[in-house]
Figure 1 (cartoon, helix red, strand yellow):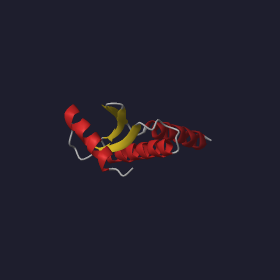
Figure 2 (cartoon, rainbow, N blue to C red):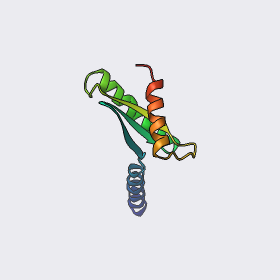
Figure 3 (cartoon, one colour):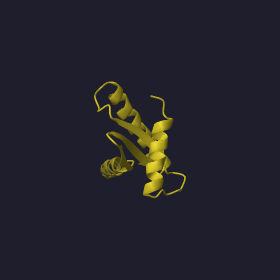
Figure 4 (cartoon, one colour):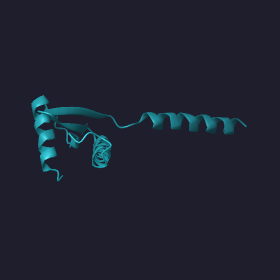
Length: 102
């Protein structure tokens, strides 16, 4: 009986810990005179994968007319250990948006 209870407690604690291990993605917006670009920035490989997923979901909804047409979404990878300052981050977001095909 004690083993069953101990196993259940360990399972609950493990699930609680896994549930808290979510990717943290920072979101930045660049305004380009009425047109905006949302940059989802991931600082680890897992965060970057989550940022790509968020940007892809945003773009899918935008193409389905569920999101504003004047806002484009991109994912930025900061998992290589290079921290961008504000100007570099803005440039990376704009460059990523221009590189994407419409």
